Image 1 (cartoon, each protein chain N blue to C red):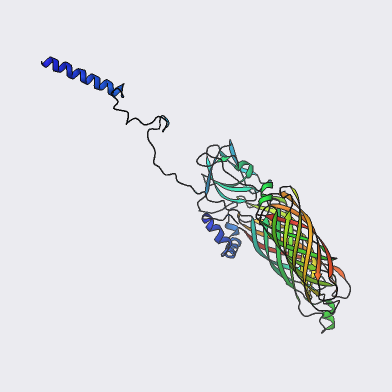
Image 2 (image 1 turned 60 degrees about the vertical axis):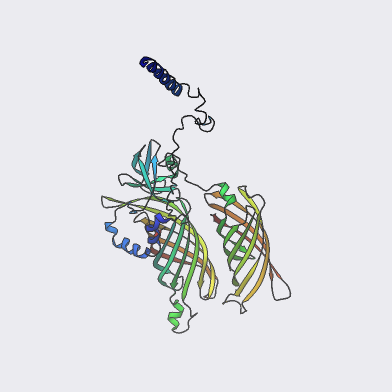
Length: 224
Length: 265
């Protein structure tokens, strides 16, 4: 009896184990458990429930604009030399080209006639104001050295443009051209030394003529 | 300027409110300022060098010498961009300028390519905003104009113009609103037609004529050409025929020719 039970038990065990291992659906048990073969690609055992993080990239800081102020001397033809000051705004289009707008003013002195005659003034409002829209080109970019361990970037640029000068109660179409140095203290702060000639037609002294008004300035600008 | 983000707060605040302070400090500390130095402790965009090496120049331009090289596999932080040059910082703290062509060969930390967008002819066609400067002749007087425009679609845009007119006998200004139609906006040389109305103010020169200031309404038609130059830069030339609706018996007709340049955004 004992051996018959043992044989039966062993047979049942063998059938169950083999059925589970090799012929899972032999008795139709596994039909419900088996997933449809088309629902998942083979090998996808675990479905990772990890949320993808959207990484926002910081925008690159563009520093193509330059703003600053300048001061210097302006020689107004027939009206002596005086201090001048103004503001400058520029946009760098390429490493070579930039466009620039300047607004400046100077105080005109007396003509020789006015000084010698003693009284009569040709006009009262002696303030000269101007604006210019210019195109510049960095002709000679390079480096300058101070001492042994320091190098600074600098640029020699040529610049020309059009604008308007308000002088002696009238607006006058003005052409200006010149050259300057831009000396970069850091990558964002620059010193300027600039020379310009402002040309406009002037008939204040009775006869229409083109006058040259030379201007030399130093300034500071910041890139942003 | 349009790409300012939270990560660039140090540089923006520096350039706005405290720019003069920075200028003065910079002047005073000239002797103590190390060359090619830039301190910006903000979150930066990191890229990995995929080319054999990345060349760092001392300045953002073609002539500046290469003073440092970053090897393949190492990464650099992008500090800022000026025109087509990028100021990058290597892991060892060295900062230098790299041109766009080399930057395009770098990879993001996840291995994908970095997109260093550069304006193209397609942007010239589809850009929404435009602004420029033109100068020329307005019925014998000189004219300087500024304009800004907004595109409703690639063909039609609306522009606002402001002009200063500087003549031998009188000066003045003019403001107008225009509708511009471009027939072939995808062409590099794109012709356009324009129609507009505005106001013109003229005042005689003080030394020549004793007259009165006048403000009149003005209408115009015109045609011109926009030419894509490079990056965000375009050249523009145009002709406009104006009718000035004067308070006198006859209207005045003025022809205007202008050339100049503009940017699109």
